[in-house]
Image 1 (spheres, rainbow, N blue to C red):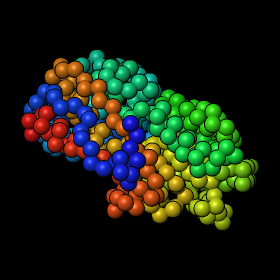
Image 2: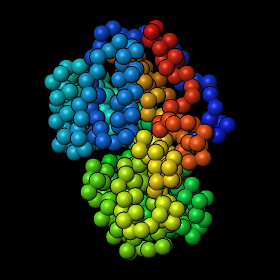
Image 3: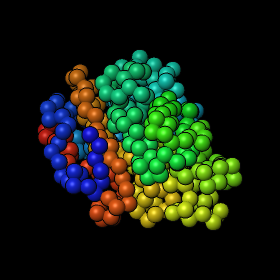
Image 4: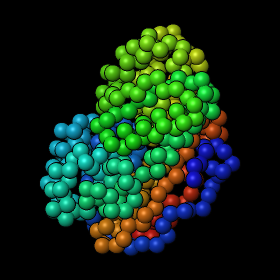
Length: 335
């Protein structure tokens, strides 16, 4: 199910996640290995893990891979050396770090993940107990369908992705398939690393404007971070947010993206994940893992975030669904 922020269907709803599971294991220490804390989705999940860990009574250490493969490998090594009770793989492909994660599995340290690969749910590849995510293909379809509805079949779309991550390739492929199936045109499929958006997106935007001009009507990206740096280049070219390519992101709903959408600042929509809730779910899944219990199998729903929807939300710049997930998990844990 897709929620729409600000729509009547997004009013307070009953909790659709787990209601039973093991009580809190006492005195555990966990490590979050974050791909890149500059990424708003990864940061939002990390914050959720910290909030949930405080409730369950666990200690948390956060290690930042700082946006590079080598940094993530080093962070996994540091995590392993700390000998924690569990590890959260936050925002990077398990295949990329296969050798390092084999060391964690050999040490019999339970691992849960956020966005570690295309397979979501229980028993994900790489020895991961549970990979938490919304359905990434649904997220891409929602973003692509927004572009078609916004611009009609005459749209010209440029898609931004990062082949470092298999899930990013899969999301971009689905964006392309959905646009083309509806009769839209994909002008270009751009592969540029998320970690380098601060230096690459400005010149890249200028180059694409020169190449495609007014035929470039919509920009779709697999993450909001691309649009952190597109707007300034458009503004420098004298192109207003209303007149330039309309930008929509297939994830993850960063605070910066919410602010751009709210103010009409070179991003029109995002398809947001419930990042804080997913942080709580990661802690719950680890609590099940360390006690030898089955994973919950819960899959969260994304939300299409628009300016009109945000106007009804007040000042909040995050998608935190109005469901009693904190109370539900606390009850499971006996907290």
